[in-house]
Image (tube, rainbow over all chains, first blue to last red; front, side, top):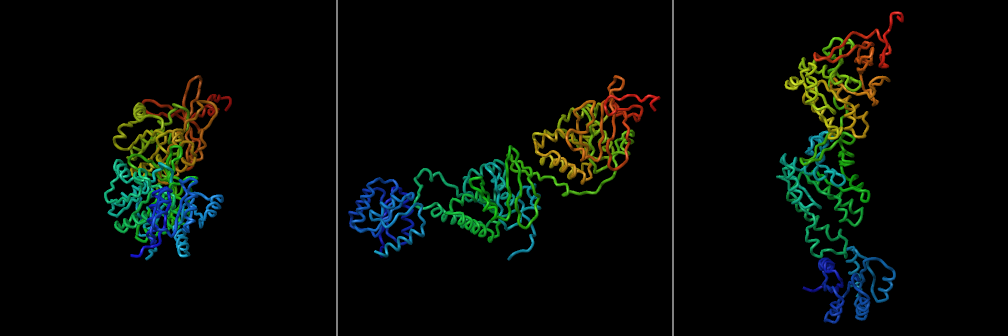
Length: 122
Length: 485
């Protein structure tokens, strides 16, 4: 079986990862979920380069930006997920190379469409 | 295929509510039960389903909030037979709290709706219910991303059930913060429950395709479930037996009244405390009992035993009448009855037991049971109903003044009366005496003079007309002397 595109999930809430995984796997993606920055950084050091990363900033501190820089330097497209809208946050994330910022809760249909277009562009 | 008429109605399991709904629910429709916490929504649903199951119909209870075990236990304690009722438990389990199942990446609508919908569909396909109770529908609101989705979802869900030939009842928890107007528009019928200042009422706000009894009706919710007392509407009852005169059995009183009082009329007996108003009413009943007719006294003030003894002391054989079934004395504790409950009691006596004379002793006590509501309209409805049923009604009203200024009642109810009999204390040459007179008689002529009235151990004694006195109504009459004539 040919494996689908690989998506890296960074999310401090395991239940969120579980739900995203369920949903994205159904849509044919390979998923790798991480709940800490260390785990996520380790994954980036590994053999596989993800096709896309979804980074939920909830529960993380300033170090999240370092991780974003790491994604950017490896040319991994990524989206930031935030619990609320803030234009300062949005500017910062664009500056760090994010393709955009999504505000929770996410609408499943739109998320899927967004992921599809982003991965096809690559 | 659509049917053009409704061959049968489905009972709600509550007789009084069926009456308000002109026979019951129209099958294959959806009904909203709304009300605040503790107003009896779940109980109403249990009545609906258990009555249906007793008729052999398949019934399904979908609980989105209360655990099914708890519902069943409470219901069985209250004597509901839930055999034949299938339960679907969609209430959250304790696991939800124990494990970290909270999430925020997607909205609950996206995550929870599918599994819940799947469970409901599975049960509905399996049970094929004819009756469904969903408690509460408002839970779905949290599973919809917006109002439009909620409305569409509810509509299509209800249609799904109705297409499978189910009659659906669903509850909603309405509050000022979360109104349920949308649900009211969607449903075919709206039944609302209220609990205001300890007084429970039920009302139908909407019932597509049928008439219904408007207004708020009394409701009692106790450990046996719900009893509904439909509010009396005089027009609803009609029976022909008017005009026949009832004699008091005392020739002088009959002379005063031009023969007696007629059936289907209201007679006010007015007078100060202790003058013998109740006794006069009982006298009519004694005479009626002799003809085998049944009378009922609703005593708001006096204990039954005391009334019996008092009656017996003046040659009215109350106990024997009670034993023969021609008299019923009922002590009504005004604060225990709502007006609708009391009206229901009267209706039972009249319609099921054929009561022909009713006495309310006294109007002041009745007023207490009304608790601040409009006494006049309540009494009006009750009296008109009794009149239409051909019952002779006696209302006892006590006047606060012993002598002096003349008044009939302290409440403005004299317009209700077809006949007014008044009893007075008179002071004649330093001696207390009683007098009886008639102030109004709608259906016949009457004597305009007063007569002496006395209660002895042989019964009521009424003398000749007091034509030699003047100023009787002041309470201190004077003899009319020869030279004045």
